[in-house]
Image (cartoon, rainbow, N blue to C red; front, side, top):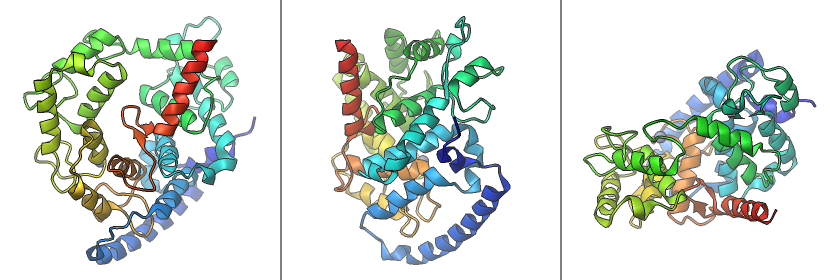
Length: 357
Ligand SMILES: [Zn+2]
């Protein structure tokens, strides 16, 4: 099997791409100057077509500043694919869908004959380690220290759902073994009861959820804790009304002009999703205004802050934040799974077909 063109979208290390990245950087610097000078115009319109172009570009080529993400290509691809899905624009990549699906499956780490590597299975983020594009070839020629990664496994499965794949080529046994291997004694893993206990213990004195017991509450970990409890159907079992109200209050207090991730930190586009999804706020007028300031009116995409270069992560979560606000022209999202409701419905259909078999 030949590498599809899609694999070439992020060959960050080739000279050609580096040169192109420099050109893009110069171009973006000039654009930033222009954007700075037109910020006062305060564009309030959601520039859907520009964001669609931005995500399409992310699947084709990326500036050199993304090179540190070389091992995380799967996640960058997810931001672009889910962004296109949220904007109801998957038709733009219709002819590439099969290639992208093949590329994602090429990064699935399969068990060897005696299943001795079962606990390392899952999806990799890229071919950086040197594995073959064909999973069966990679299986025959194992690479020392090759292993799946939990974030890449999640974004790979979510991307397959978004692309309408039926997950039939996913090795479920291996994925489950890989995830089970990550279970920690303290409960930060996939044992449900232990995981619930860990999340409960990670609630800080402020009322939000930290990355672990005794740590400061944070917008990202608050979302992960709440979403995990919702997906396990344990939210109301884990927290009583008083605790849930304190949690909501902590989230509401993160709203300044946009949302911040922690007290005394600057507001940042992505927390419109992390905190907004935790709360599903109703009074979000200020937040929309902040997002309109971080929207790049020339290249499309969203930056972390106003006048910052747009990037795939903040572009995606900016779109998600606006979806939570009910922005027209953006699909409804399934906040706990962090994909569109449409992709989540597709997953539920697959689950039903598994139950019937
Ligand atoms: Zn951010």
